[in-house]
Image (cartoon, rainbow, N blue to C red; front, side):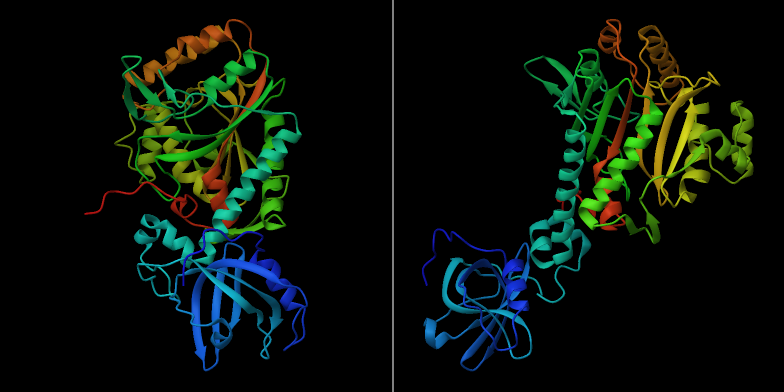
Length: 458
């Protein structure tokens, strides 16, 4: 059997299966359909051969009569194109009665066990193409993520935002607390960084008058992996002129709700063992109130360290007050926030780009969104005073000198841009991989990244 070069005018299996499903057993539709996909099951029953054909939309049974088609030399994993009529078997199985069959690609390496698929988790990530091929759930997750991103774009585009692209290679990294990847540009004859966030360039566009901008971007952080961390990840950031963090809270809730409805048809999900509802409005709690309730809040670093040590928290790696209070939050508060929660009004030391609150100059208008103990989003009323921004960068320099290697380095060019006048604005960053985890109900970020970073084979 020779290999055909093309197979045009095909239908999706899910469409033909639905057509066959509506028939009575042993009935055949009058229409002729063309399908293409991979053979992932074969059962020879005398003069009749049953094949399972799979494409990205689903699976259907093929009824093949070799005496009518001639010799059919097929192996599991071969890719074929078929033409025939939808039918339903006597046992009620939606099928296609095949009238012609073309071999489109020949498999050369045997597939894994077609029933169990790839059971080695490491191999699922390393050979994702086989995981997708054998695991309908993995294909479904990939499609869900794509539809989620499309829904996010549709929501923001429909609300007047402009999608933009900003540099991945940056002379300075900024916009997030992280250790960067560094490389060398021969053209520039200098070291440059893979961005850790998009924030500072997007806010330059706010200065430039674009007013409502967003980017779906690859960001990079040269740090360890965890169930929610990957060195290469996708993030959505948007900035909206003349808005503050209260407006951004509402937009964040709406965006996540829309993404859930577009992909799941509702807002209820099961994530990390908890049933949660993503529908608006989400519960809200002040950062300081949450820590005070646990008895681990103090502005004095020695007192705070003593409180944490008394609670059996290891503080040996915490060199600054900001690191101590962040440790207190991640240890006592974040893990207990199961239902979608907005934690707002954070200490100024932890938020170099946020505006101060009206009531307390030691706090800023920042919030994080947490679901099932996992941070999903981080947002601010953005600081728009250039002089104060320069002071905040100086504050971060003190943190770096005290041993916090993830503190912001500062960006004089960004401060200069602000001197031309930046409208008040609200901004938010949402982890796209993490949102995909929530909607797909996956416990690890590697399940929703098609090709996650992996160590080399031993």
